[in-house]
Image 1: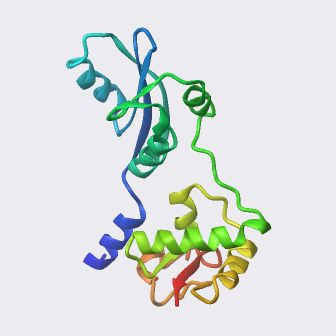
Image 2 (image 1 turned 30 degrees about the vertical axis):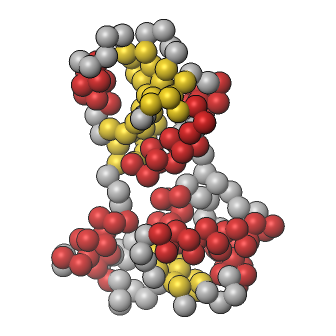
Length: 187
């Protein structure tokens, strides 16, 4: 695999691990963070905390998910990654997973805007629709994405991927993703 392909693949697939919710013994504060090994992180945190700590919950995710969750609960933030114990935080971690955002037909402009802003923020001119959805916890719907690109005033375009251009991403024998992947580009 070429150096360019490795770099692109690494950008598409951030390091996976767990978003953890750690509580102090009196449950007054929660720590929301990311680690590939939450038990090790708990031990490291315990050495600098006089109160007993315990892991309440872990959810599969990555650093981006951690940032989104911390931003979501910013009103409860006390210090760095420590948050006041609130019903909203407890309820969120009870769901067992990061919920997927579902766009409806009335949200086409919002979807187009979100795609465009995400591409710009990440210094990209294009991305695979399924990867965009995974990274942003969005349910993929080809018809909606196509209409959103139309609503973008021709700033975005979605099309089946060019297999020759992106052949390094596919198993040459199985063509595993053939017919399932779409490319979104800024025009």
